[in-house]
Picture 1 (cartoon, rainbow, N blue to C red):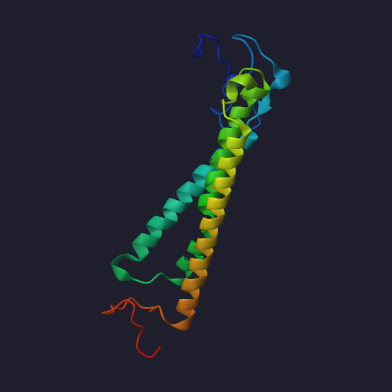
Picture 2: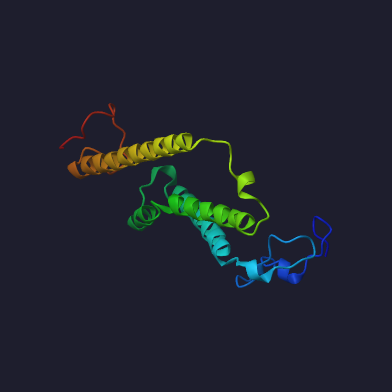
Length: 180
C-alpha cells in the first residue's frame, strides 16, 4: 500500500488498523527507512483515546437516560441521582484523556527529529506564557470555588426545606413553602 508521500506502508506501520496496542510506530525516518530503535508504543495513546471516547459516550448515555426518566416533570429516582453524582468529574476525565492523546501523539515528532524544536516553538516571550498560565489558573480556581460554594448553598437550602422536593408550582419562587 502506498502512503501519502508515495512510500510503502507495511502492516507494521499501521498499528491501529488491527486494534493491537502492543505495536510500535516508526517515526522520524526518511521515506523507505526504518528506525526501530526510536519507535514508541501506542499504548498510552490508544488507551487515552478509548477513555476519552468512552467517558464522552457514557456522559451522553447518562444525560439521555436522565432526560427520558425525568420527562414530564418526574423526579429523579435515587439510583439516577447517585449515577449523576458519580458523573461529576467525568467531563474533566474526558478532557484530560483527550489532552494526553494530543500531547503524547505530538511529542514523537519532536523526539525523533521529524519536527525540530525551533520549528515547534512559537515566538512568544516566557513572561507572556507565565501571565496567561497564571490567568487561566486563577480563573479556573475562581470558577471551582464558585461552583463548590453554589453546591453547598443549594444543599443547605434543600436540607433546610426551602427548596421543594416535589415539583410544585409556587406563585412567588422566592416564597418559602408552607410549614417551613
